[in-house]
Amino acid sequence: MNKKSGTSADDSKRKVTRKVTVAVIGAGTAGQNAFRQASKIFDNIVIINEGFWTTTCIAVGCMPSKLLIAAADRAHEANHSAEFGVHATAQIDGKQVMQRVRDERSHFASYIKEQVDSWPDHKKIAGRACINEHGLIEVNDEVIEASKVIVATGSSPFIPDGWAEKLGHTLLTSDTVFELTDLPKSMAVVGAGSVGLELAQAFTRLGVDVTLFNREKRVAGLKDDDINNKAIDCLNRELTMHLGSKISNVGTQANGSNNSSAAFIDYEDSAGESQQWQGEYVLVATGRRNNIKQLGVEYLGVELDNKNRPKHLSEKTGQIGDLNVYIVGDANVHLPLLHVASDEGYSAGSMVCDNKKAAYIRPPATPFSIVFCAPQIVNVGLSLPEIQQDPTLEYVIGRVSFDNQGRSRVMGVNCGLLHIYGCKKTDRILGASMVGPDAEYIGHILATAITNDLSIKAMLDTPFYHPTILEGLRTALRDVQQKMEIPYQYHDTQEASF
Ligand SMILES: Cc1cc2nc3c(=O)[nH]c(=O)nc-3n(C[C@H](O)[C@H](O)[C@H](O)COP(=O)(O)OP(=O)(O)OC[C@H]3O[C@@H](n4cnc5c(N)ncnc54)[C@H](O)[C@@H]3O)c2cc1C
Ligand SMILES: NC(=O)c1ccc[n+]([C@@H]2O[C@H](COP(=O)([O-])OP(=O)(O)OC[C@H]3O[C@@H](n4cnc5c(N)ncnc54)[C@H](O)[C@@H]3O)[C@@H](O)[C@H]2O)c1
Image 1: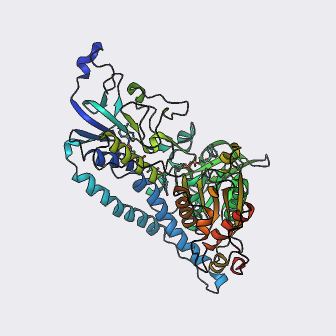
Image 2: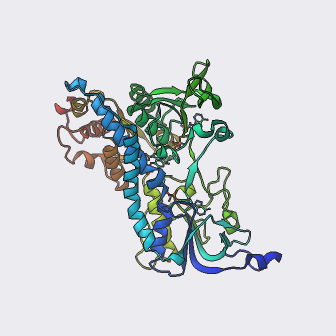
Image 3: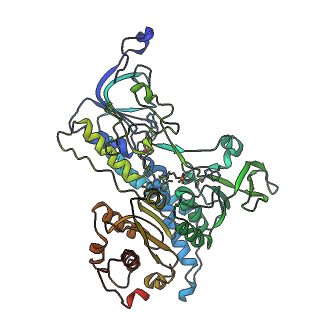
């Protein structure tokens, strides 16, 4: 993509050092998939990456966070078994907890390393790429002219202006928190999105004194008010949350007890009262931003909107309009999730091969997200506001509460609510939102149903084993069916009540 090659006076300084058919910028999940796929056809290909080559997911994302949650859940179960007549108190070795997180992370990273090591050295460049005004990729001493460019530069934690300087060594983000060698005594977590909720609850369960702040009275960005209120109700039972609070200042101050400094947060609580929190660390989880602002994609003809999202993005392949430019994974902001990054990378890698061989372009995935707090939070398909905006969608909401659902109660995890949005006209599921036990499995079933256009009748004709938490899904589907006034199945059965 050499937009203006040969037109500049300082061309001599920008001599092209390499011409390639495909350049992939970023070697996370999306970039590695794109590279692997495109390499099946093209030999003249290069992948450029700054930092670790083991993916955000493995190094600082999905895997270390779930490893921490796994330890936290063990501790929680030990400490909360008294209702079953089993009395125990968890002895938590913070150093061992954090070491296992890193050891297991290294285990997962070793698979990626093996793959990356198998790629020829001359096709890998370690360094920060930027695209110059001629549409050439500059990295280290190289100036690369590429016919096709795949941008897979991911995203990074967003830190509000000035906070990094003010909080200094007391600031943590998801990029640094897994490097802690021991569990801290106290921590504020700012942001109740997926990162904030998962980590705040995990550290609480591991005995850290955690306070969670969020500026909205909303968790996990939930858009269905009933599900949001239920999630807050369930999470409040173990988490200290200041939702709807406004942070006015952050910083550090001398810690009276020793020579160190402690962090503070000045905030106005939801009742309008001025308050101060003090503690050891502030984990900032206020969102992520795509790594694209400084890259120079505009020199390839890409237009960005005011939130740095690429315009004219094909959600199927990541292609930008009819340019030979593909923006995939978190870099395009579309759905910043692992499976999406993986699929988009694969599809873009197939596309640059002109779809000739071994190419499979996946259809855009049904929107689907899981937050791995307890109870889990899941959203599938269209959200309630999206459905409400479209008057042609005649919808009903099928509900089930998990507060007294049979197996949930047996297991002592009976807090939750599922809403299924059904379409009256088509007998299909438009979307769903849930907080509750086994939500990750229920979410997968609902995503399968939406993706494969299953009718609610077809879903109700499939077996639901007894006693399972998944029987709650059937209760919600029956509620949808009843509200649609389509009496497919007589279901005055006993098991709905236990
Ligand atoms: C704490 C946390 C937990 C998460 N948990 C989950 C989860 O449970 N499930 C889920 O689906 N998703 C989860 N995610 C999101 C998931 O990790 C991301 O969606 C996914 O890893 C994005 O992959 P990617 O390939 O787009 O980017 P990345 O893996 O981030 O790769 C981008 C690469 O590009 C490099 N790069 C950036 N700029 C340049 C440049 N100019 N030149 C060269 N290289 C550059 C970066 O250094 C990086 O190596 C989580 C994220 C976080 C932070
Ligand atoms: N389980 C998963 O799939 C998973 C887990 C972690 C991360 N992720 C991915 O990472 C992305 C980023 O997650 P995230 O949680 O960092 O971002 P997010 O955008 O989901 O949530 C950020 C939260 O911080 C709040 N906030 C922002 N500024 C604030 C301020 N100054 N004071 C108080 N609150 C403030 C927002 O209101 C919001 O609730 C997610 O969108 C998701 O794609 C996924």
